[in-house]
Image 1 (cartoon, helix red, strand yellow):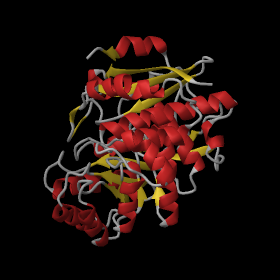
Image 2 (cartoon, one colour):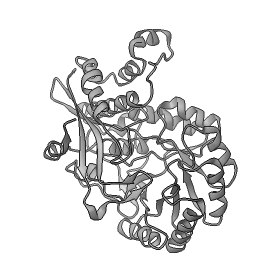
Image 3 (cartoon, helix red, strand yellow):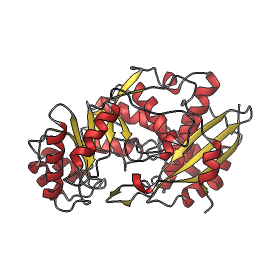
Image 4 (cartoon, one colour):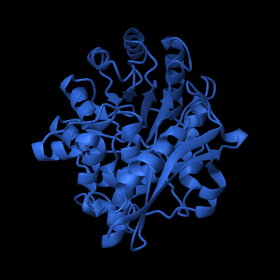
Length: 389
């Protein structure tokens, strides 16, 4: 079995006006992603996804160009089962042969950003192909499934102080969620304004529902520490991305300033960045985004790091179907995982891109049992929403 065709598209799915939300990223009018299709010479097809932005804030022309014109040609003729070898080849670039012989990484200079996003898309698609070729779900290849259903939390929460309680309680009613996440930070302004929204949320949902907050890295260290003090009696399950990902020392300072667990990682790429988070004692929960961190292969390594440092894994799954389903398989197989992110904002890249129905019942989401990643792409939807750069 060999790879014979690689094709990527910038897919932009519009969000109807009544379901749009506004955050520090602006108004979410579309959901965008780089969707990758890899086909083998015996007709098997694997689907992947690469990401370089949040929601509708990104231009995917460069990433799609890289996949089609730089990465894709390097894959033609290769065995798609050589997933780890291909990962290191793309990561190390021109020195991949030297790195393989020496037994240590010699990555290309552009080892983050678009390079790893492209690598992520390829890795996800190759795991999809391998599972289909062996007629088993990907979690089987990752070591097995610890649960056939995983707890999920509702991810959303942009409403103002007067409406946040109603918004979060509607999530709980719709899916039976036992945990909800809301956005805070620069979208509100000073920390006391976010704290007021958190207090309103906690009062509305009661003491028995987990409440998480996500600042998208928009606070300074001082602001994040102040916010923790202001919500000290709200029993937060975690505080996500309190400061920018580049300030790991600052994140460690925030973590040490209070009792709220710190979650982070959606802006990080590869196991090396997560190693530094662990060594700096910057986080309690790792949140790799599989469409950016290096795919399924790297997410499993990151999960192993979490386990080794007695931390936990909760992948960032605000994404399209390939990334989301890949995250389900990683969560099923990783001993460090404990919950699945389920976006409650409008997400046509999950619900309309594929033919299957994705839903949460009684706060739980099922792990796919069909071969590969477990979804079927809607070719008409893909064709209708592909952007020509």
